Image (cartoon, rainbow, N blue to C red; front, side, top):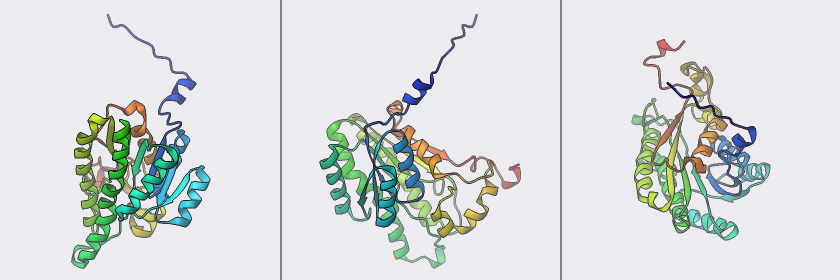
Length: 267
C-alpha cells in the first residue's frame, strides 16, 4: 500500500522562500546586461545591492533605480577591489553575497589574435573574479557565512564559436576556480557556485556578437533568447539559505540550447 502525502503551500510560505531580506549583496558588472538583471532580482528578493562597475554613469543610474549604492570598480585592479570591499564593510558591517559577473566577450579570431587581446580578456574575465573574490572571501570567512556566485558561460565548458577561443578559455577556467575555491571555503560556511548563461538578450550581445543576437534564437528550442532576469533568478537561488548544501556546482540557463545533437532536430 502506497501512502500518499499531500503538501500544502500557502502564498505566504512561497514568498518566504529565497528571502534575502537584510542581506548585503555585491554585484560586479552590474550597470547593464546580465549584471543589472542579477541586481534587480536580488533587490526584489529583499537584498540591499551594491552596484560595482567601471561604467559610472550607467552604474549610478541602476543603483538609483534599485535603491542600492554604486561603487566604481575596475575589476582588473586588485587595490580597487580591496577599497570597494572595505568601504562596503565599513558602512554595512559585512557582505553576505558576491555575484562576480563582470566580463567581456569580443570576437577575436585566432590568426588575428595578439597577446594583448588575450591579456585584456583574461584580466577582466578571470583575474577580475580572483581580485574581487579574495577580499570578499576574507570577510565571509571571519563571519562564517557567505554566498559566492560566479558568472561563467556555456561557451568554453560546453560549446564554442569562431572568434570565441579566449572568451571560452576564461569562462571554462572560472569553473575550475569555482570548484577548488568551494572546497577551500566550505568549512567556513561559504558556498561557491556558478551560473552558465546561454544567449541572453543584452545590449552587449547586440554590440559584440551581432549575428548571435539576430539569429541566435533559431538555435534555441524555446525559440527565444534569455532575459537577464533569468540569470538573476538562478543567482538568487544560489544566494539563498535554502541552497546551503550546494557548493562547487554550476547551472546552465540556456533555454535548452545545448541539448539537440544537431540543429536539424530542433522543431
